Image (cartoon, rainbow, N blue to C red; front, side, top):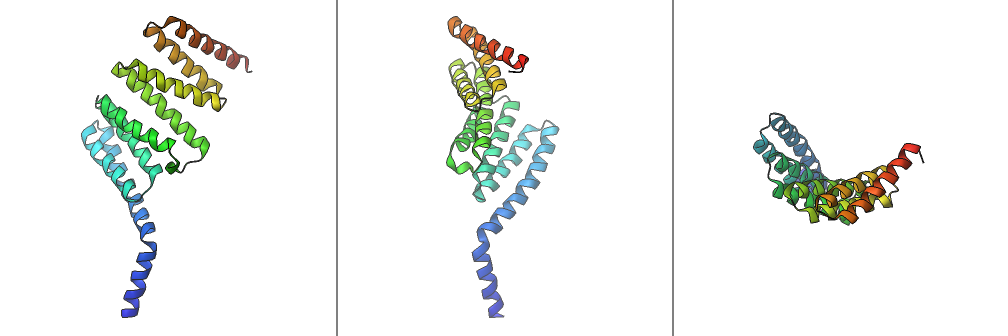
Length: 192
């Protein structure tokens, strides 16, 4: 009997991180289903509660990539609850993980996720009336699209930058970005 107890302890000790990771993944799956159910019923408070449980399980599993996903989802729930400051806080946490080496994603995926974070942050800051922060995030999005040679992404970011700068009364900057947008749009329409 002592032999079996010792063997079990060694098996658990040697595999404990993997066991915790698997249990956490299962908890995340269950909590996510509950959270989405509440979200569909527009019970965002309860949805938030279960998305936060997903986040806690990811932290226990020491999985930054999964953790980032839940920061973004929690930010989206706060946005639906019209708590835009909290939404910004959680999307910024998502962005920080995406930019860090701990995110674990491939470079292309990291760029896409980072771009999505900048796009969402620009939208949130714009809703909050913080044009400066919105512009900063749109410029970061434009740079990512430029690095990836993503003409469609460049055109979209340039359009938003043009409109936002116009709204802020920065007409020469607006004209420059809108000109860039229309040049890119023409190239996209021509197929070049």
